[in-house]
Length: 440
Image (cartoon, rainbow, N blue to C red; front, side, top):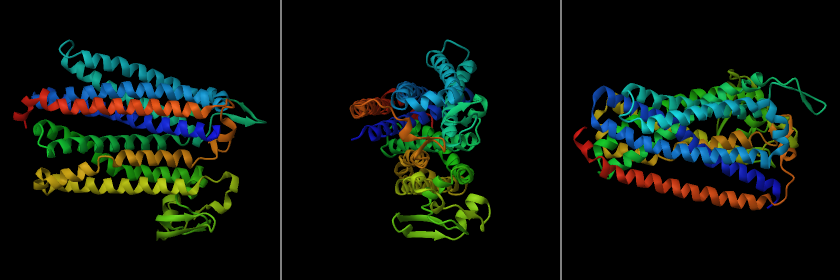
């Protein structure tokens, strides 16, 4: 394995690991705070039980996210020194503010975990809300930095020099809103479906049904509402990508030829040599509409992108298809659940609906990973779009492959520990909260 590939794989593995725990850490505090709110309003002990159980999960993911995030910050300097040398002064502000948000989150979480019976009940609840808001801000600020890599702003690039730096303009670049919105909604979708699926499984097993039923209701509402909003944020993102990164859009859709009334491709196997897509379902004009708002609009194809500037088409296309396919599957689950809430109340107590949610448990995170693959692989060969190539940013230090193996081992070990802690937490629920059985 050459050092360039090892550096890219290590960063990809680290990001793929961190993003799961970061998203859970962003969203779970809101689940916890809503359950806490219901406890304060109704005084039904089942909501207190759910709140305390979820608060322990929040603590686990906060610690894991902190560790994996710290590793990422070191990897940016270790693996991509040329990138950080030039980009650090430009987009360092969102990272600095993210550190402040993380600091506030840590303080609020401390108040929340150790404030039971020690502070005013509503102030205690408010600290939980602060944990969620600060965690959400942390995620948005990090995504703003990534958006800058896709839509660089806040500097003038003259004769290889980065001049006239404006950190505010860099942070609020033209892609930050659409990326942050899409990522935030994705975090709620993935976490909502994952948490709902776990509690649905516990209900099917007949373990502490009242407790898991309340937890399932809260998570399912968050996840299904977010799933229905995600296509709207996806449409905004698609239009932004079409304008600022036409090569990425062309790779996402395996769109080889510039044309008007461009068809949206569903599925298919890209043939880059023949510049075509086999076995695909094509919807005429829909890609043009999604990209330009006009069914007759022209969509730039890979034929107008120099070969050395084209992203890997197959990986980007397959990842995009996985993301969209799983996203639409979750929308379908959401619509079924809404129909059950509105018209088919009997479905809510049926095992088949719970089994649907169990099957959907991993969908959100698989779509999340696929979406980040599209974002990062679709920007290649650039680390700063149109300004710096990834190959020019990598560290010259030899032996990065050994670092990749080491960090891979660390992350796998950390994953096993986290899974064991969560399994232990879930299995202990029935023992600790048996009193909830009478509170349905």
